[in-house]
Length: 256
Image (cartoon, rainbow, N blue to C red; front, side, top):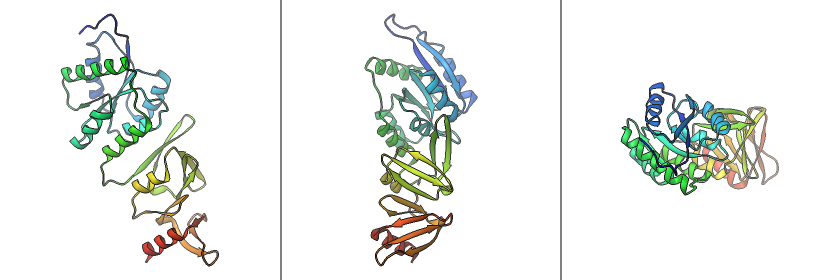
């Protein structure tokens, strides 16, 4: 397939944990003279590094990957490029993709469907289209499903990416525009709000005991009175977490 002289070269990155799936994308890209594949990644960790190093125009991004999924990849990128999701998700998520993403390809897809997605990439490039971080967060919520609690959090420190199972968390602490995630003596900052975590963590396992603190109930060792009207939650690691009046009431309800 040819392209018009006015079209610029599209630098594409292919991200999928399946060799066969990347092979299909590679084959379909080769049919277009204006597409250059700048890299291939087999997992989300590689994708984060490649996106920042290569600065592709478009990423064909698998949603369902082990350890770090497609949405977690995007949460870790400061300036995401155009994204075409490659997914086998149910229809409830596809509706969100169609509105907010550049396009989606539902596996298995034919060459003609790939061509349509690539044409949308060309159109969006001409319009300098971008999706902000809030939209990506909404997409992530849609993909996870309304009733599925958060199971892990992807964070980065410098060039290192880590995935933290939420069951390992001792507590979460508000830090300006970030939330500090504490595991023992280690901590990471995540650009989210306490309200977001309160909404997405399993309420049976996590409780907001103060405007600035959410604790893992499995780590709770006891509650101590500091004064008549103030309390602290004592965690297994020895952390002493302030408890507000409302938080103390919620603790009493949870602990019976």
